[in-house]
Length: 148
Length: 327
Image 1 (cartoon, rainbow over the protein chains, first blue to last red):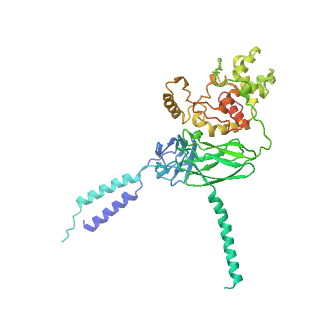
Image 2: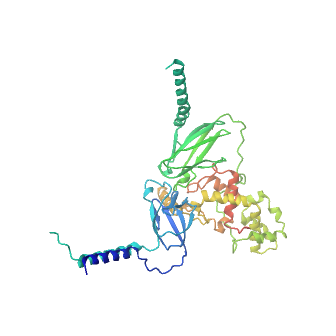
Image 3: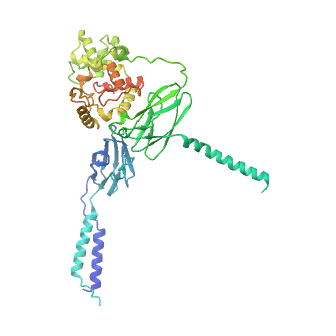
């Protein structure tokens, strides 16, 4: 097997790892409700995991000052005063990880009041594991080109 | 350059400068009112001078979180006071007097302490003597225990009460004066000489309470409740709002400084879903509590903020935690 052919194979394997569709079992979308407690300067829970297609309802409860919640990528937001909890309902139709952040200035640390919405599985975790394995394989199996 | 041309140029330039500069100067001279959380000083300045009949221009900004601004007992739209932005508002006061302005967006446990006054001077056009609130004219002790000794087994239903109303001389109970001065429990005992069963009597009481309010009043009361009461008394009236824990904690701390006066522990918000307490309270009593506030507790005094009508609407709404009204 020539060196070039092996290299071509390796590149092909790399492309497969990067773009091959992962075996996903079809998930029926469901309705999910999260109650998020917003206080200076954090959300709890601050990480939400949903499946693509789920109808997500976020009930925002503020416990000190006026807070908001803006989901990056989805471009939707909600604002809650203490005592007047507000709800936000949307369909999680975009897969990926999205930052959500407070949308009203709630004090000095307001820019750091963030959380994360994850829609679907983290494909790139598995793909990067695949890449690492390929790299290790290539490192040991390929004849190193002597530089002289 | 010819002389007339020079003059006209000078004239145009000064005209433009004046047109832009004069309003700008006026705007810049209006002092900026800073809003901070009550713990950090509240409004600064917190006393504003004004004259009756003349417009008062205010510029507001916030130094920390979102606040709001409104003047008590005044028909006005509240404005938000946002950090980093300047909010302009122009007010006109018809009558001289001392008005209270207050924060309208919850900005922490001590939000309600964030108040200031506007002193409006001018000649009293028609001095109206303030009317005495009902709880004063009835000589009610609003701090006395007022528990109802009998409570219904289930939430009294105004719909069932309405069906009973035809066979009862209930109209004699329906006057606003009667409703406002009697607690549900008193009405319940007043009905004792009728042939109704206990639960029927409670249903009749619920109907009586419903007939003394309107859906509009209830909706207005609900809105006022959400904006001003729910943070402590909770959206469902159970007294476990988001600030209830903080209030209890703050209460304990303040009790320690009061040298063991533990009998004053009244810091937890009242549970409006508790029938024993609520069915023993007349509208007049609740009016007193809302007007004056719970001295020494976290309950603010609303007398300077709400109009009388707003307080009656609020009271009508608070009773809806006890009675099943027609939807």
